[in-house]
Length: 489
Ligand code: ADP
Image 1: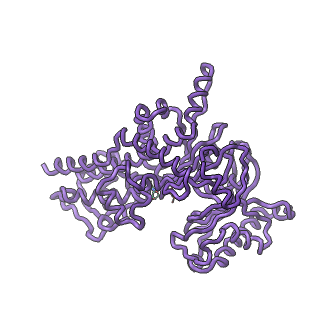
Image 2 (image 1 turned 90 degrees about the horizontal axis):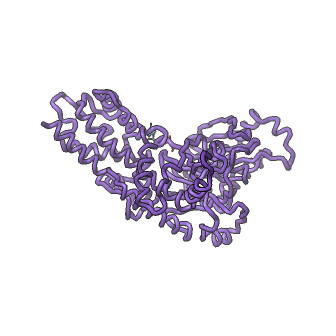
Image 3 (image 1 turned 90 degrees about the vertical axis):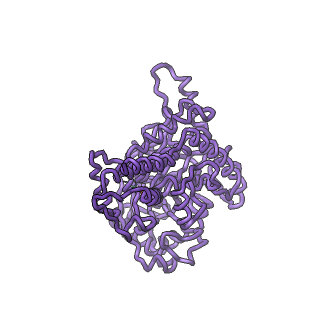
């Protein structure tokens, strides 16, 4: 009957999202290739940006540090007291950024930011101020989530504004210096010592809080976007020598490593290995940056809802919402408006195990403008959601596997395991993750781990890899992570 035909069609669309073991393995091989390319030559799409952070914390760090975060509608100021036992206390204040400052001039914006820092230390750290001498400064880490060309740990030139900001005179300037100048104008005992990317913050925060002693290998964000930062050997970053000479940046070589911000959202923009469906192609065509961030467009929260919308629209030609039960659709509603399905809807539907799909029907009614959908409709939509969500999680295994292999972290683990006496625990490779998709999408880590197991027989050196990897949530990269970078600065 017609419901059977609808479900068969939904399964066929769902099958287009299936990401076979060999596809994941191909992804890992291509990722390894692009990783090496990005580490050798500047200007690659997967940029592999040296951050000049040359150590990750191990949880014993102590002290009070400031962190500020400018990235969207709010400006956050916090202080972090690191206790030295993987724990910390965080005090914070959040202020909305006045609209007119987002499109005015740089002096007005940065003096506003400096004033927020002043209010904050007056309220929470007046004693620190009193004790401050010209040589006793509070160190501040500046999380700035706009594209910058970072040339040193505390120096980065703004490339362009995004997210509704437009302050032309700031473009090309060093944002740390802009902030420092206004802090100095207020006479505050504060030094901007680090410019922080949120992914690097995630890595640092996890490394401080993780149970292990040898530090975290990789910090990864699966939120609005996706990106990762990891610890790389200096000997594997051929482009670094030339880059640091050109910018005149000196850094501490003693650890032999540097944190690399991968910008893996741009992995495989050339589309050699990533899966592609009509629903992905429609999304890309409709996006502000066609042909760019192709990995991110299959993985992260900003996009999964729109992939689902495209697939739902396709299914409407095959009997979806066409039952005789009086199902009706708002023709001007979210289903017909690009980018209007939030990715949290996928989590809600995936988690709906009620026998009549009550939660899915409710969501259709309240969020998607569909009233009186049938159980068959809901089942068909859940089939699509399952395909899209599982593919996102399986693709997320690609950079994780490749990083563990390329850095030698997995080789080291195997050696340690071989050398261990019976019963001795060998520390796993630690990965810190953050973002609503990995945190809330049901089964995300399970599907990711399945994909890691799937590639074990297909990628050289990967046998046993999944069991060697520990994944943990990294909380508050832009706060504690920024403080930790200020500490190592
Ligand atoms: P950001 O990455 O912007 O710092 P988040 O980690 O909260 O912030 O990610 C926001 C993204 O996560 C949005 O694209 C949103 O659609 C998506 N999202 C929010 N809630 C959920 C959820 N419960 N399940 C899956 N995705 C979600």
